[in-house]
Length: 252
Image (tube, rainbow, N blue to C red; front, side):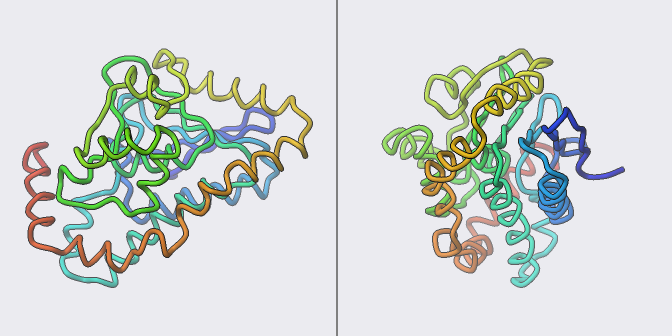
């Protein structure tokens, strides 16, 4: 089974992460997503939808996999590089991208959503956010700025410091999510939003989008992520303890 399932609706390609049960982002899934984005653009896609599973869009990075790497700094750096390459592929795509979230989107799942032009989330008890401090991590400055770009700096500070996950209704009120829909309508609404956008004169729309998103693209510049420092922090004892405590809570 492919890790990314692609379906086509005219010029719109839906890229669905397909790594059950929660689309945990291991290197293979990240590389598959990067490749699927490149393939869709090469095939002439004019809009992309990033989808996941029902109830869980993506649970974020595959923490058990990362912990198995132990203190292998090169392997850890490679795994995180694969993730950020996928995020950059979304953020830097030359066509509009919609995140269709029919479920929870913590941590890395939230980052992927923040890289999209437009975010649609299922109504209900689903939550989204950057909960890094809850497990002893520090979100890189560029990721913090991506969040602030959507919700404002003060609100982003409050959410980031607390490692807060907010429900769909609050995410919609604060701008973290652009639209709510019934769980079975999330993907339909994502396609419809893109179809509406693609009715506009193409070149002016794309050039305006490029200018408007330049600050977002800059957020994932290597200097603003500083992966070597992030990986060094990942290996700190308190971070490792926090990660293992999180896995114990969820029965992993």
